[in-house]
Image (tube, rainbow, N blue to C red; front, side):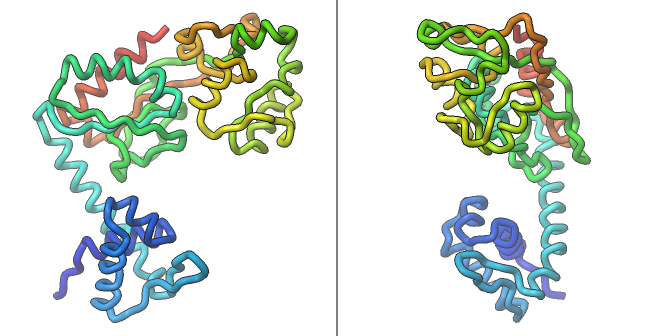
Length: 292
């Protein structure tokens, strides 16, 4: 029986899920010509056309659709094998990747990384800054700091703290503007987040009459938003442990009950047996729990 080359199947799977050769090549760390050759080789091996080009996108043919679930099953098996092997590694060395929101990655993790470097100098830390959830089962990260409880099979999570968030402005902004008396007063000064429609809807839900086209400063990155707040360009919400580390920042409504933001530390069940990942996980848990 002929055995399928996993590299070719992986190239097919990545291309099918990404929708383009360039995106799939970036995901796999390959050049686009290399990936294209692997997909072409698989089509030649199977004597079948797996993709057709529609505009700038690659779309699966009927044959490709029929093979996709089999390729996904192969991918899950390969990931499980990698996870099992990583879980049995006992050396406190090698790479450990941590996924966190951009604000946590920029303002909270550097201090914790300093301790990890001191206590486990042979570990290479990879900090992944992203506001979407990393897929730990596919090894997009070894450990994730999330603000939602994990519900995927195979993951274990620990609620390390219950953070709070409120609205803040800089002292320089307050020196030029009258201090808002209620949250309803801050709509025109808010720095918006993408997507603005969803953000405005959320603001209206907590009593702030925001509109999608009412924001004059917008970013998808909370570090960018916070830097603009620090420079007196507007008002934004931020978690208290970050705001209290920032000089020149004033909490606008300290008497108002703050929004609760859970902080979960998540990893894959198999990786809990890896010493290097366990060391990093335990330090993260200890440091995040003690944040004031």
